[in-house]
Image 1 (cartoon, rainbow, N blue to C red):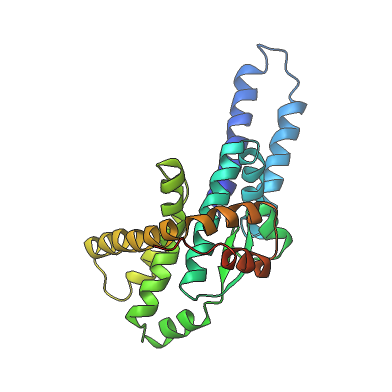
Image 2 (tube, rainbow, N blue to C red):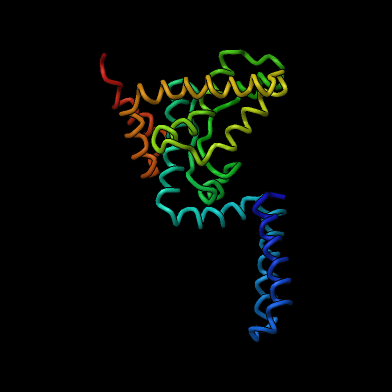
Length: 229
């Protein structure tokens, strides 16, 4: 059960308790909180068993997208992943900027940039993960956080990215300290790629905001090469 689904259940319990204690004071009909509670519990059930936790995320997205800054942060975050993956020769297969878009496109997860990661999956399955491939993916995973830091001087997103790093690094023997060092070095690598190709990054942000295709995004990146030294 997702955290958002658990939140829906918690709100339902609160409504029941509140209506019991405060209902008589405000002449509140017990029907109103009962309907609200039933609706929330219904959403939680559908979300947990029918939508694999995405339904709650979609509801959260609706609130998050009322803020222009939240929308811009998500856009800049995902553009960071896209640009760095492009320059590290990891093919981007698609992108979404919200859980709702991911649900409509039948993509796993809650939205973001998707990659052709068959080689990574095969390496992990065989237990023969190459250091160079690991470095490339770690840099890509840290690119969203790094892009946010470059644009806003802090990062609000990235929990899922850090979790991906942990899931890959822990089984191959990275200690907590080694994982933290890998995060830092990967962030530095991502920052180098982003700053050296900042013109392309800004053009990519504009393109993704307009939801242009992945192929068009690649063309836009190619049309904005880094300045000559």
